Image (cartoon, rainbow, N blue to C red; front, side):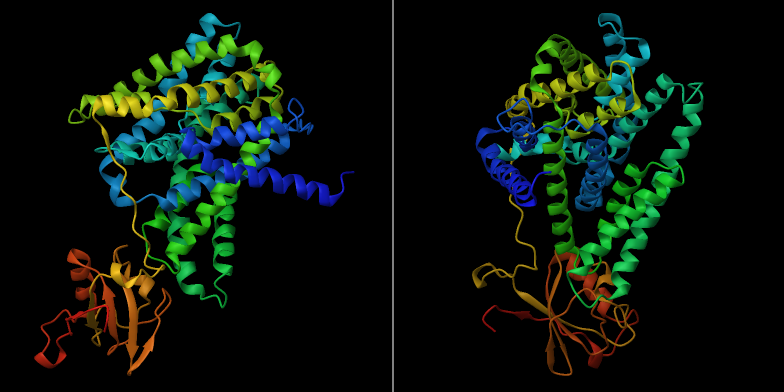
Length: 503
């Protein structure tokens, strides 16, 4: 039995190395997931760390929990206004595109490798989903972004295509092991899982917004725990009722993020930190699980699969899926075909055959691990070059500080004062219920001459005077909420004048 202090020391060292390596990844232009995996591999039994770990069951459980929070955080951080114009393209790529990729790679593996058709399709299904996080980390390291609809389309596709890959993987395993007798059964199963996942995800996301806004907890630190419990409830309830839990948590995050709720910005940051912790734990565990010495014998197979995936399957799937969208420039289609990097999900899915007792599960796991590393290192390193050559690169714009972090005086925008009138849309409502745009911040609220620091749970009342930081359409929206709908008399007209920072 390892003493607790030594166990904690090992965990602390690996966690510290993982966090520090994220800084190195920026300098090297290599996604952090590769460095996390390498740290796990070095700490494993084949590396200098010498830690023996051969428990695919534990790796799968940790990977499943990690995926729940990673997908929820991705949905929560996704801006609905940005992905709405590319919604149908993203949905088609994340469903039909994943299926076409799996079919093309599967048949190539069947005709060239010593695999049965179902085994070849299983290998292809495992590596069929993409990971845009790897793409964006490489682009950030080079201080570039992508033009047009490429960024939101990649964001939507990668966030929503994992459930499809998971469904294909589990279905093929069921066919191989005999748990499902007929492939036609998968059609109704697919419809049920996706429909229930979408419906429950949307309903739970809306319910989360209501619960967070209404519960009014006494301690700010309990709100992250509340949302964590609701995320786990969303996955477990959906999966227990026969739906796709992974799709449900992603849509729940997307639905919740499109509404205003108490402590929104800080909760988004909390779940982003949670997602990073889950990624580190997941990658370290998967790195410990793999034996680097077993990757060399499958290098030839891995390179062949990579070649088919990068130069045949992904481009064909993208071009076929985007045929109905004729207005999309050809340069963007080519770029989208090239940036289909594999990420953490394929490695997690590669543990499923190990647990299910599939005959060639060990080879499948090692091939998938090799494909992911090769895809990220070889294909990923060329993304900035292709973006510049195709002319789809754009300068990376740094996001401004959120309003919760009050800027210095030299960065202040002029404040506008508004008065909440009795009977207006805002009278008697919480600030969170107003669903204000992200660029609108109520800095100070004065009630009966006394200043109040407003929060999402603050209920506005007639006569309240608001000092607001906003502009343009967002300011017009807020003004319409605090004014009466009918024409007000001159005495009831809201105050509108600029307040300079030194006032």
